Length: 234
Image (tube, rainbow, N blue to C red; front, side, top):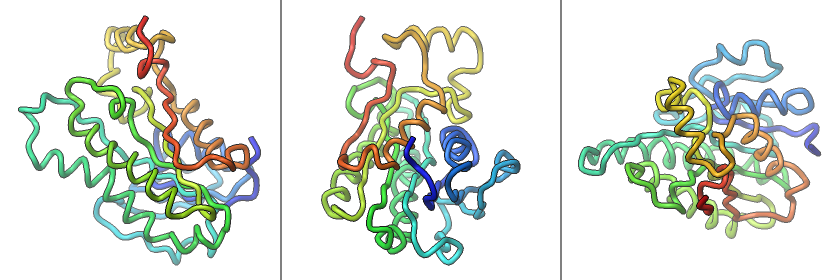
């Protein structure tokens, strides 16, 4: 990992993938976490900013003049039949997954531009490129994230790179209701060609790659990190 002495802002970095990323990067970088809670990061060398991406505007005066990385982690997994999803449910998922990301990024765009070589990482889902039942709401909002990723990558080049990761189900608190017993975990494992679901550390490592110099010639990409479920049939 070639990522040292960088200023990285993680929106929603107090649990799941964001927390794993903070644990990975904080020993050698200056990590700022903007999240609603801070209990899980009490032992980490990070700076916490109380923030709810769905209702608040991020105060960029609490951040350094230059940011080298921005990662937006908040998301939703609202899996229900289309006929059982209200319009309000779609709007809520869009607020969490898209509007929150847009507003947060707008707040710090000047600081990212000041870096001259900054990297933005969003999260999509395998269900955007691979149609899956009961995923209409999350796939709709994450599909918007993929479009946003490509559009901003074109607009911000060459000073800011923008990429996204599209995972399958990952063992995090967000997915806990789908993995809360051995039977559910076994079934989830069996759906993936590689025989298991993902973990937060794996996604964090790929995020670190996208933030670092190793990916300096990559922008506008959506990386599928999904145990093979997105494009393999076994």
